Length: 594
Image (cartoon, rainbow, N blue to C red; front, side):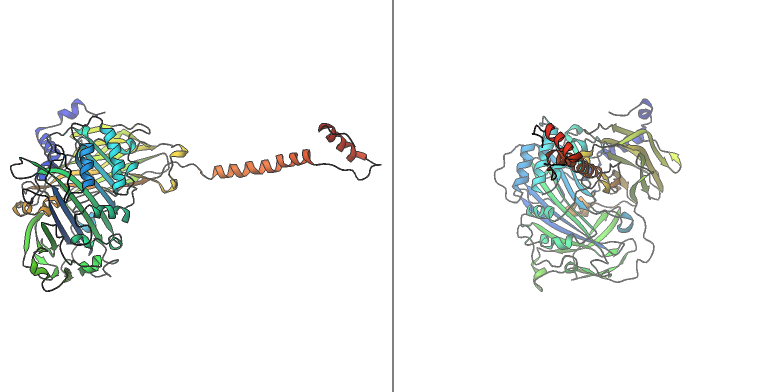
């Protein structure tokens, strides 16, 4: 169901229409089809990279990226030999006619106010969105079978994905690889916000790497250290890309990313000095022998103030300047394939020593961020509120807002309110699919214009449904998780930047995509919500059982004892009342009287 009206479409002025289609096509335009820094034109390739980014709170973020390319078109060729590309994923792509696959597992939530803009944000729990090929006849059947297969591959609970938590967005998720068809009926999107990420998910993820976790940058991925962190996110992205500049042939790219944030007080003993050994309890001894590129990038300074806040050791003469969120940043580069790097030492322990005192000022809020919460009282109704912040000093930009709400929260769409600076903000585009009880969730998509230096509040009222007693989880009083909102936005840069260096690095081309330097695309997720539903007293069956057993034991037990007990009279001469009662009972039982 699409909510459209003549007034809504008449409000789509030429500027709004241009902004809408630019936003919808942003992911496809900003991610280069062939990928930056592509390997040799023939033969599979593998690249590994690590980005170390000190955060404004004193914590540090480590972002790993492993890219494996298969120089074959799985859509048209039958591949029987896999050299670097995981065979299990290649067979899944071919069997279920997958165009693109994006899967992420995240523990924790990225805090933009403390850490700044996220590098690669993903929603808490598990997220899966897949584009299928046009040849698929039954998309829902392939989707259901695919979730079961991925559940086994990654040891996750993806088999709990069904029609009650699956939606088909029309504008928020566009293909990131080669795709000339954008029929949204071929897209499926689902999240499991309650999914717990643990070692069982990390082990199969590392097994997809050509060198495993024995050598190269993957040797740093020690489970005990990764899960002793404030934020952890691992993802798998599969898409078709151009094999060369002419795009005469197609290859398949597997991009595995892992982002982890180490806390200064938990892992750093209250100090802002960091090193690979301090973070991962190990160092790099050698690159992966199958890697065509193996590099470590280190952000060592506050580039807005043009000063260095950290001293990086060992020193490196290689640096790269790339645009990051609209600003030019300089990174120190360590090329692990250079023989001189391991000549003086058998291992590489990159360290950042804090110089201190240079960033004592109040940190600037991120240009764009959002937060979400539930208001109201009682267990009958409530309000879902989303606050969207545009802190750009002078530029307005549109944001595509996606909201997925389970069926047991019955939305009142007529109460939808969008307020910016005390005035109503009418969306330029709106798409709504109502929920069906126990069949599908609510889906709400809107294109909202954000004025500069503004806070936009989106609120909608809902009513809680009463579930059947068999539909409650084992811990019903913990509450029910609601999927986070998704915001896709094309943010204008504060200043124009050159993208030549960006296109030359496969790491930064995917972390910070930019088309012409005047803007950059970003997809953000809000916090998942925890909502309490009317919960019956599950102790009542126990009370009923106890009461029933007591009644049976006292009532029926006494009556049964009376009927089956044999009465004997000691005084045969004087029977009296006892003998008379015994004879009556014996007659009822068909026994001769005394």
